[in-house]
Each structure stands twice: as structure tokens, then as C-alpha cells.
Length: 434
Ligand code: DLL
Image (cartoon, helix red, strand yellow):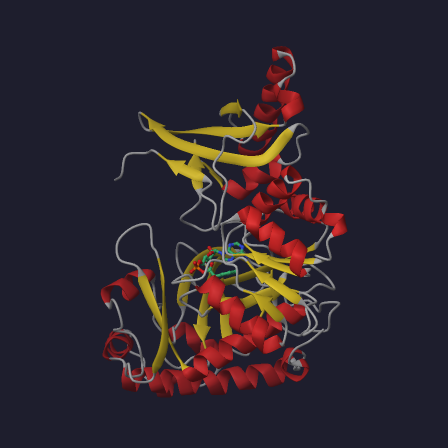
């Protein structure tokens, strides 16, 4: 199902012509309106007139979170506050939050892109959409809300948390689509089982999950436990919020980037040189149509690659694979790079282990150490010590196969690892700050 069939199936040459036109207009506008961007472009020796083809984008300077912080809160907006109708902000674990703004037209664009996303996930105006993304400064709740309304569906704005009530509402209202982070969806599934609610008896059929990395094994787990098709959606506040890229229900294989509004690049994370289609690197976005807060070559820190092979669904937009991590989430354990989601993928292949885990990173001398705490099932837990030891060894071995060195595994009692209501905290980093 396509929300904007014409746009979503546009021949690539036509799409590229549209992108160029929009890019040129954007650069002109930003150069004229935002002194900070104008200065950065002058420093880089580039003027709007230099953007003659799409490849010229590489002449433009990058934008980073640091640039946003320096201009906190509204310094990079291209319109006056009179035209801004909404702001959102990301909490930011360190330093000031990053603030983003929207004009009325931006909100309309965003609602349309989220309606596109929900359509790609198979939702229609007939659906009852339970929106368990957090409402507030986080872009997930309101972003998805406006999209669900634009689609014409009935939206239930429950936000995250109050899980029992969430399930009662789901049953009583007959929700057919659940929107939440994958870790919260797992929490819902668990509480559902505790309440004796069988998901097979509910009309729920699709889960639209995003805002954090989740492995293919987690998908299988969620599809099984909630009896849904699980669709991955990606986005970030600085670019618009959710509604940047989405999987289609036809293929569930890679997330289509809404390239008519967001121009993607993959750059080498060390040299920042653009990489060809297919190579893995850092994902960079330029917003082509946003008014209040456009970004030019925003470095997301997310690791991805672009895939331009045609997709079974007919969309011509390039795809990115599931995002397994960010450059700043990457752990370097004895010289080997590892993402928490790779550990998740390993753990979830092991029978007797529950999909609840936490990774504790510390430093001994000059070496990083890693401990993986993982819950075991009730039956395993009440089993003989010998069997627990066997399970411990098995996980040790599997992780060693992944990263080449062993780490400490702690099997913990069922339900002891904190459950998520939004983005899960997978890693606890106890290393001394540099
Ligand atoms: O998480 C926007 C969003 C809301 C996306 C709801 C999807 C659903 P931020 O809070 O700014 O925005 O966080 C953005 O989260 O750079 C990624 O590192 C991560 N992320 C988002 N979606 C995915 C995903 C929202 N599907 C940051 N897979 C991004 C992996 C994701 N990581």
C-alpha cells in the first residue's frame, strides 16, 4: 500500500532532478538566512552557485550535533519564531539538549511522511492505532500521532508506560496496530503473558517499531510473542523525527529512505569522504524541503549502507539495512569493535535465555572489560547448577566466536533487568571519563 504512489515510485532520473532543484533552493535559502551556515560555507570556499549537480554536495560543510549545541536553542532556525508552531528536543545524555523547530508546513510534511510510513507498514484508515511512543519533547509520540490521523486511522494516544492499562485498552478497543520502541513492545508482550492475555485472541496484526537498534532475532521474538508483523522505522529529531526511512511490509528487507525529502549520503567515518552505494559508513542527511530547521549534511553517527537494488514493493527509494548501531555506541573490547545489537543477536539464539540483557563496560588498567548480564527463563533458573554452568559456557563460547575474546557472563534471575518504556538502556558504561 502506498500513500503517495507517484512520489514513491518516481523513476530515479526524475527523482534526482527533483533532488537537485530542491538542494539548490535549500542552499540559497540557508546561505541567505542563517549567518552561522553562511560563515561555514564561506570558510569552506563554497557559494550557492557552486551547486550545479548532486555530486557537488560534497563541497558543502557537514553539520554536527556540536553545531546545534553552539546555536542552542534556536540559532539555526531559518524562520522567525512567529512562523514556528512546534519545537521538540532530544534529551541528550551529555550537555545541552538539541532543539528542533517546525513551521505549519513542516508539521504537514511530517504528518504526510508518517502516513507514508504507516501505509508502508500495511496500515489504513480502517485501523485502530495504539500509539505507545512517548508524547512530549521526544518526536516519537506526536510525530506518529499526526501521521496516524493523516492516514485517517483511529489513533489511541496512550504514550509509553502503564503497561497493564495499555494491554486492557488494546483488548477493549481492539487495537490493530501498535506503535512503540521494540524494547517496550517486548515489555508489553511479557506483561500480556502475565495477565493471561493471549495475543492470538487480539486483532493486533502489525507492530511499527523504531527509535533504537533491534536485531533480526528480536524481530522474530516480537513477531512470535505478539503475533504481529514487525516493521522497522527509522528517523531522528535533527532530520524531522520518525518518518525518514521505513521498511515495507511486502519485503521487510531494508528501510526505504524518503529520498524526495531527505538526501542520504554514506561517508567514511574517519575521513568523511563520500563512499559509493553499497559501502558501509556513517549515514549523512540533507533535508530538502523542511522550512524552520533544515540541516545540510547532518552527520547522524548511525552506521549504514545504501542499497539501490529494486524492491519487490515497487518503491524506487534506496534502502538501508536495519541499523545495528551508532559510531558512539560501538564498544572496543580488546581492539575488536562490537555493537550491543550484535551481542543481542547472539544471546537470542540461545535457548533458555530471555531477551532481556544489559552490557556493563568498565576498564581495568588500559583494557576495556565487558560483562554481559542476561536473564534466564524460570525453568532454567530452577534447574541444577550444573546446567546453568553449561549455559554460561555456551554463551561465553558464542560471544567469543563473535569478538574473539571472552567476557564475563552473569546469568541473572528472571525479571531482574529493568524493563524499558521507551528507549532501552543496553549499555552501562563505568569507564572513567576521559
Ligand atoms: O528516535 C525518532 C524516532 C521515533 C524514530 C520513533 C523511530 C520511531 P531521536 O530520539 O533523535 O529520534 O533518536 C535518533 O535513534 O540516530 C538512531 O541512532 C536511533 N534510531 C532511530 N530509529 C532507529 C531504528 C527518534 N529503527 C536516533 N533502528 C538515531 C536503529 C534507530 N536505531
